[in-house]
Amino acid sequence: ENSMMEQILAFIETLTPSQKDLIYEHLGASKQLEEIRREEEEKTGKKITKQAMHNRWNKIIIKACKYFGVEKPKQIHRKKGWLFRLKVKGRWILWNIRSK
Image 1: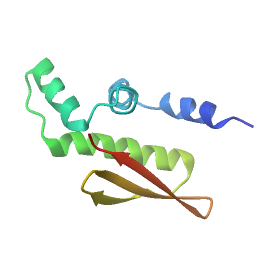
Image 2: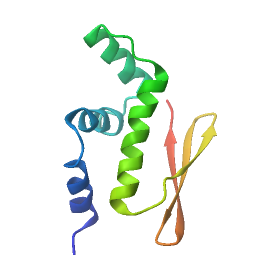
Image 3: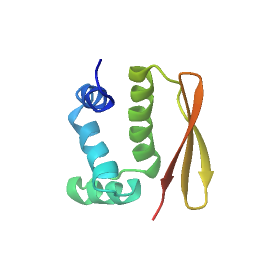
């Protein structure tokens, strides 16, 4: 049986290069989506809306849920970050992402 890390790495291999970059920037480098959006605007010279960046991230979340066979988490907006409810194997897991 594959370990969770092997499963995650296998999932990451199904992503496009730009989706892999977004995961690295957001989770690996701990950058906020807004910061990534501004940097990409400066780099490309093209206008990128906040909604467009959120949609990119949401596509990755949806793809991950399908890959792992779980329901899409419910987002609960909070003052200092996001709280996701994720149902895995009949149990709810809370996942908190804090804003800086």
